[in-house]
Image (cartoon, rainbow, N blue to C red; front, top):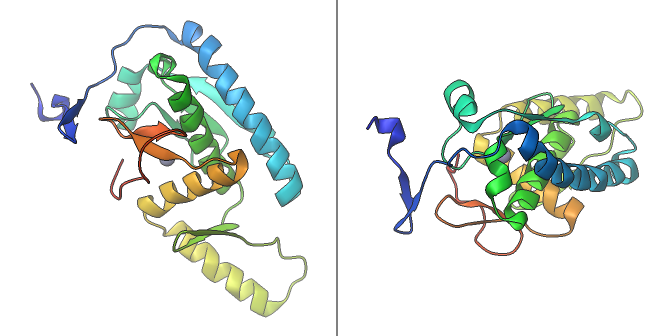
Length: 200
Ligand SMILES: [Zn+2]
């Protein structure tokens, strides 16, 4: 067994690598419904709060977990990811085997990333509070300077902050807090704790 194949342990339980079952076509029928439902909520929120409708351009793509593991470094607890431009959510068909609450929370988390990435430096997490900065309307130099600083900090955020920001955005949009539960610390709306630091 190679080091990377060794299951990780949390709370004495083992997070095992997902067993492949459905192919992408079959899984899509399940996963797409969750994606579409979350996307609708996010689109509505974006229209009302950011005066934009970029979320409708986000697309769902499917690729086998094994492939995502080899090419994108997916771990035992990764079933979906969002591209850095926020326009693509890739999901493994193995996602369709997870409990509905988990799939719903994972989709909300990914679209939280999408909204954050589609509106650079608009969302800032200060301690645990999510701030939404308004879009600057005039070319005030002070405002510009502040925005540049914020952009620099936004780009250099560490992954824990990026992940926590996605969760906080998802909580605001969905009206429910995202938690992490089970041996793999997967997203859940119903049980678990806040995202542990260092979780990847
Ligand atoms: Zn994430």
